[in-house]
Length: 422
Image (cartoon, rainbow, N blue to C red; front, side):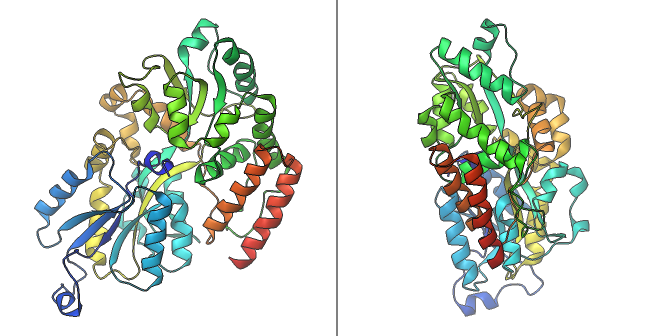
């Protein structure tokens, strides 16, 4: 799932006991004060920035060294491996860096422990990202990486037509329907293959229209609304009218990025990581594109928050070391490196207003605006089932097997069944 790269290119981290420790006798030698060696397990550090950060930690904490272990580069596989270990009651995990959408599920299952808010400088973080780390009114994680969807557009094409980038859905539809074919381009693409990215795109459309899928408590189904129908109709009409191409129904993050980077799209909804790739010398659109917040019905819309949160396993034998490691990884100094060396959007608010960083990363102000207006994915102890239901219904909607009214009614029924088992 490449959205985890955008959403973090994601460091999915689990700090677990040092790989060399096995058997009861070896574990007896660990400190009894909650401190000891750890292993940092990630879904794949694609930029190679993490090892040097851990080297710095290890140099300053010789009795609490961290060893890096990487899981497969797939969010689904990483989640499955984590849950398998946690369900077994294993105490191997100390710190988990979980996708923001998993926080509620892991907290409700008792796999991660509540954290003391006063232990971490939450006021220094972008406000919406803190909400992704809470469940049932308590802090269960600390934000590490954030993300928000952005609208990439062909600036050269719009400039030639004397047009500004779209601020509303009506602007987007008109330009994607008329300007794109004039220049031999597809109009608009997001991530519409049935996977987590489709849930993200649907959630953004529903929230941009003023609706929601679940209530804040994660148990109340709120999708049966005129706003939700409007959001789904926006996507369904795009396929029907052709400004969303049929090819886009098979896109995940990378397929859609490639289509834009190869000069085949006028508009693309994707994560911030695309900016660097599309600006590379080999990109056909380098220097020819811009980025703005996602549009909505009457102005800027709502993005879904991506990213990852750091949590302490409820079975951790080293909770003191785990908390210190979280503080280190979320410090301003390290968060700066998360951006400059890892190409990941940081959670520290001050970095988005740093003049040096703003010059190096021109999209930062737009990303900040998008994050501040963004919403979490539905919070639920059964999030995986919620997401699968959204994907299945949206797939049939965009394949024109169901109308928006039918899709909303069906989704309300299916989510009602999930919430009753929550």
